[in-house]
Image 1 (cartoon, rainbow, N blue to C red):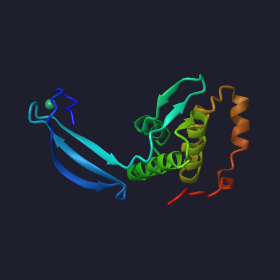
Image 2: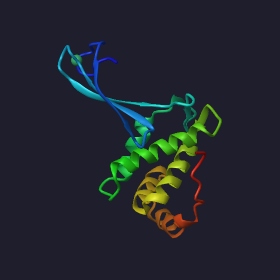
Image 3: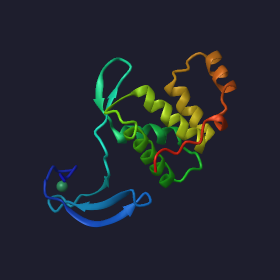
Image 4: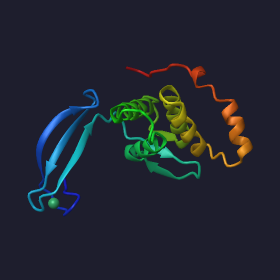
Length: 159
Ligand SMILES: [Zn+2]
């Protein structure tokens, strides 16, 4: 693994331990060239996913990007960081188990909203308002009126 600070190729693993309820391995790495320390995560990847965006472009699915958008929605909410990691892992599993190598950004948005609705209503509304591009206040009010997360089926996906 290349050092993100100096580009040295030969970094050392100092510590490895299970993370996210044994779904991932967390490794602390050390670069002997610059003394930099960084963390990597090892996870099962069932298939390579490609995202088909609404503008017709395709890009490789990026777990980090998904996680960032969820963390933004969860900002200052009373949710354990570990819980968010588990949620992201669950979402990725669901995307992988759709059985398609190509998924639309709309499918991702739907699955994220379902997952958020089960965990935190405020985070759900935040994400949905950005994702669905509710710009007009009227639209947002209508959305709030229709907001009934408890009616979203409690589907946990394949285990
Ligand atoms: Zn380095």
